[in-house]
Length: 322
Ligand code: NCD
Image (cartoon, rainbow, N blue to C red; front, side):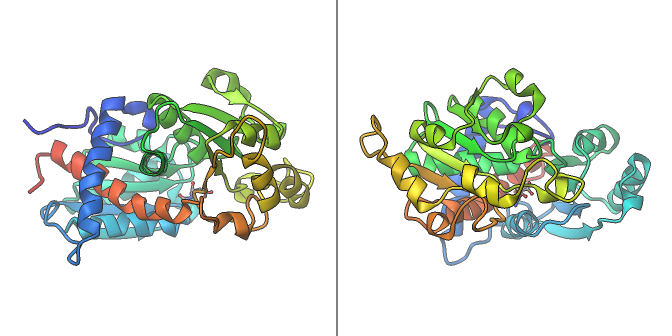
């Protein structure tokens, strides 16, 4: 029998076993090879119809999923809406059931409410892929991040990964923490106290509020975007100013070079990551974003292969891959 995921949906990293993640990575390796060919398309999902439902703005995640689906020859329908009438539970089920009535096999959904994907999976027949649900989880982002670390450093286990910034509002942070820990990496969080979740202790990770000390420790620094749209009030309610944030928690070349030369590191490099979209000059300067040790564009490239792997493996559970 071919290998299968232990789950029918991808709602969050917490639902995956480390074997599932390993299977996704091995499958993505195969698709990366396909994507390097002159003809980048395979017929694997020829009989599958996928609905991309985006109830929150997104450019790169939506494009990445769409490209992954097209490379797999799936049929696609796209629905985008940010109007408040579709945010209520019942309306969400109604919207989705309307689409499913047209015989859709899988739903890729981004939604502003935490738990929206789990909720949907309990009420509809299709396989659900969570493409980001509020401040909760963004599992494919975490998978592509860990996959990119594995590609760059040859492993994830034992790697020291620093996640910097707006942990409180970041689904990327939460999914990354779960994924990295499942794969045996060491995780440290760094950011202002006002942007650390209260439940941070339950996550079993290190916390360091001094970025220079945190950088001296890590092999990889994942610089998160300040989630301005989730801060409420004037947009930066949890911070005195973006300028102060950039001074204390932004990564510029000076700080980067100081950190790689820090005592005890032996000139060890620090791999730079960012999930995008980047606020250049806030969480990271252009010199660092475009640095030789930055894998920001590899993350984007790997996103397509990893999403292909997830869709392919979930379709396998429907018994519909060719
Ligand atoms: C992330 C998201 O939307 O959660 N971006 C993305 O998926 N491209 C991170 C972010 O918005 O900061």
